[in-house]
Length: 450
RNA sequence: CGGGCUAUAGCGCAGUCUGGUAGCGCGUCCGUCUGGGGGACGGGAGGUCGUAGGUUCGAAUCCUGCUAGCCCGACCA
Image (cartoon, rainbow, N blue to C red; front, side, top):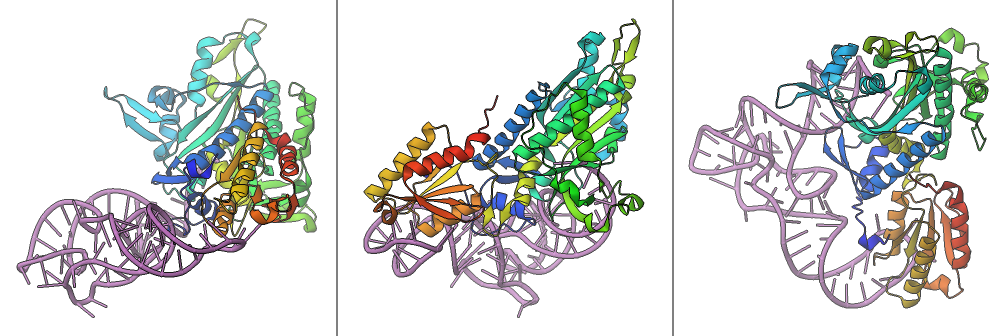
């Protein structure tokens, strides 16, 4: 993309409404614009990041064997009355009436609808196990939205639902989700720690939240520092293997890690003092096993091998896709701006032409741009005639992890400069070498999409 | 929903107390000079001062209602 053809309304000054760093940078980098309280338009740069995150979530869900689908944002209240949640959910649920005076709502989650789909079409244990998921906009009418997309009213969420014959199978689904979530967050450059949590209005016994450590996190968290040394890494997991998935669960949840909701001082004190940590975290996902809560209430049963109808065991699993954009920034920035992890960066590399209009510099940039694009990379070429300082400041603000700087001075010696945003380290090399380096850096991070 | 506050140009703000020609910085547009970390000079565009009503010869300014947004709290992914 050429910057001169892009829509990137960056701000030099910080809008007054933004309190936390991710909100400030998202506004300043021209990623979002508030439409009303807790509701945002996603401008091209922000939308690009959102889509990258979404694609990673899709890829990892597909890898785990889950089926993508899509359910409506507006739902009839009837199903929610059936589960009893129409009354339980309270003011957080946005309710409305259609022209026939029927009660409707904007979905905050979709257990009822998916259960309705299930019970209408699945009747045999032979069709199990089944896990379907969607990435869809949700609405929760928060009393006080704040922190930009971190705590908006409208938000993009991946929500998945598993249906299993037995509790044992459903717990495997739970473990499988835990594994796939660990993998998903790592690909986004995040360390998200599974912590024992409270189930809230979803209900159920087993639940873990995934938290990213950040000073601005909304939850206080207590954990054994050993847990931050765990890496999922590049291991090859067979998602159909109960043993393998369970082993990962054991590895990642055996040490103390809880949010303030479930914190147990006595248990925490059993952790050696040197390893006890109290910090803050941002919740970026949660997994639940809730057994037959919805299947019993809504009659979602299958016939087992013995011919008897039994309610299915279920769980649901969420990833806060739009919230992750903010969480990643909270976890990865400096005073000049965002620092995108390679896996989610909107553009792979910025090309800064230090002297637009200089024939040699222009030509070198065009060649770089074409060669990078040909390799499937996404460069953002600043071809404007702004001065160098301004170009650098914009690149730093929008957080591209790598930058190639091209100027007449370097070109005299046949070199350009490759700079790492995170470390600030620069290296001079030929344009060809820079292209190869960037291609090599991003080889493990090319999101294939769907 | 309780408490506090704000609304003037795209963004950040002054002007309101004490009523009388709507301002500043940044951004933006045009031109010239510049050119390796937000450059200089010159010239422009852009605001029914959130909204409705009231007081007044006259309202951004005083009064009343409404709306929107922000902060603290409770709540929440």
